[in-house]
Length: 359
Image (tube, rainbow, N blue to C red; front, side, top):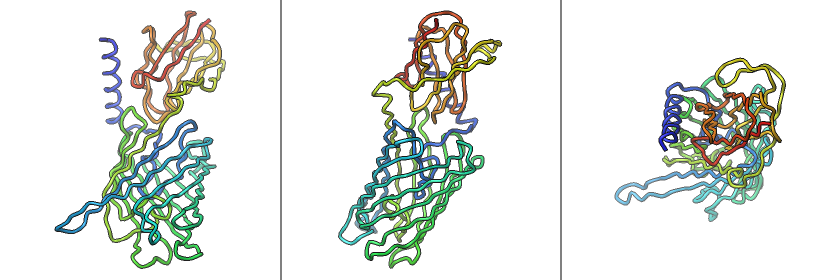
């Protein structure tokens, strides 16, 4: 019990040190986009994303009645660059006598800056039942240090006529540290109708430490979060929040992850001493350890690389090894010199388990 408390305390202390240091973190959905510009996020395969956007208005005195406009997003990546989903916006003003929008969308992101491309490029195509037709958005994004810039061009079906109009949108995200960001955006449609104004939004965004969840506090003059809704502002100022809930299926299905890869080279063990021998690379992704197939030989070094957007540890069940918090994008190594079976877990996320068999 004392040892477990000590590990938990070290994990919490490590998280606070990451916040203070402001080191980079692979962005989660709400941390890489603005309230009304999606950035064409895809997410990780094997994960179902549920995002809740809740915006509130209050009437004038003496009633001061509070009304809310929730938008629900459910999306599932089919591959690392393709996702499908639906957006359900309530209390919509897009079409007369049609208070709720349903947007069914598909997204493709063929270019990603994190994969070496100069920018992020994405295309969304959807059908909006309130507008009774298709919409589309071509979005680009680029990160430079703590600054992320987003731009989008949209083609929108008019709900009151069998024709299309166009919209432009742009936004900026400023990372204040690993887990906090500020953002803002503007958007406008061509040939605005009566009552429509330039859309704008601003937000304070945060990731909950040691979790994949993000939270954004927003102020905007936009109602629903569909492409149609996020392009049209009005005279009402709305305050609200967005909360993202990634549901990692690996956590519940307990399927074997894809095999890790091995290579021959010289490395350094956990204690920093030089070790000549093969290296087995294990990825940490989607709240799971991507374990090697079969066993490894004594003298092999295992390198864990954290490809998740949150910190993890590698903690042996028998206490034979213990990593510090492994930051996103960082690695940790341990050389196995004695044959045996070594079970390990992640201290902040004990449902993450793995076994290394050494022959």
